[in-house]
Length: 252
Ligand code: NDP
Image (cartoon, rainbow, N blue to C red; front, side, top):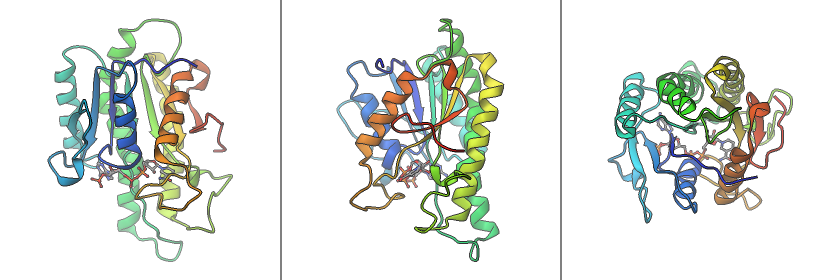
């Protein structure tokens, strides 16, 4: 399992939690990517103080706003000066703790827009840059070092497992992640011919604002480190799969 070797990465929802962990660990690699774009809905806001020895390039990306997504793609494309984007990590998400009884049109729509529709629109908007990366790296087979879309899913969206149902129904969140898994499969079918690998990842149950702070949860740096290792190992056979942070195949 080699190191992930990429020139450019964009991570959405990168101002805190797992997204921030990705940015920090990518920048801390022995051979870091030349371009790490930290997508934040408000890059000038308090919550976007992504610090470090070599700060990432901030990209304004409110992922439920198509105009903001288009502007982010244009700005990233401009800064890459003709080269492509190797890795798009669709990480931003929201969770509402509603149940079967309390779910609403408004909450369900918001969760679906952020967790499912946004990864679709971001992938569409960044497709030309991902294709360019794949074309610029014509080696055989698919890999994350070449071009990839990583959709941050959750085993909460697994229809077979119904993970942590007793802990919370989180209906809209579960449905949004089940749909994201299907989106990942569809993207893998459609984008294979363009040389783009597509994968859905479950990060584990991680200590973040979303995940909570239970003692037995996976620490964010372990989860992100594990996912980076998994990404570095993926090849042709893995496109369209649903894996966890340790590389284990998850039930759809
Ligand atoms: P957090 O709640 O800690 O962070 C969510 C991130 O998404 C924040 O940066 C937030 O930005 C951003 N975000 C939310 N809405 C938008 C939007 N409309 N536009 C742009 N950015 C937005 O979540 P985690 O770090 O825990 O989760 C990261 C990913 O991992 C998610 O996809 C989640 O579903 C998944 N996951 C997490 C698990 C866990 O245990 N933590 C378990 C399984 C899956 P802002 O600060 O501006 O709100």
